[in-house]
Length: 71
Image 1 (cartoon, helix red, strand yellow):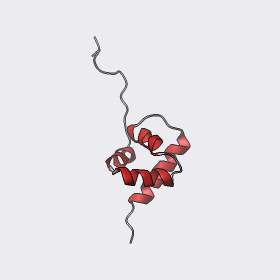
Image 2 (image 1 turned 90 degrees about the vertical axis):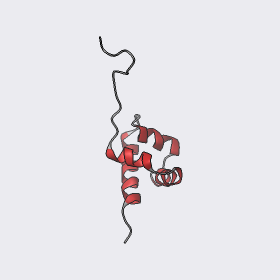
Image 3 (image 1 turned 135 degrees about the horizontal axis):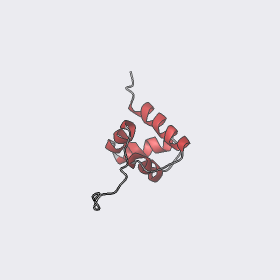
């Protein structure tokens, strides 16, 4: 019998989603604003929930630009 107390599917988050969740609320809000979405949708993406593909791409690009070092 499969463990009935555990869900059969697990959400596997990417490295960028894990990095997004580690940020503070203010930084997450700035990234969401740069991706032209709300903080709620951005947090859903950070948890691994389903969001439209174009929104996920925009959030990954915004996260990458926000975390690069400024020289």
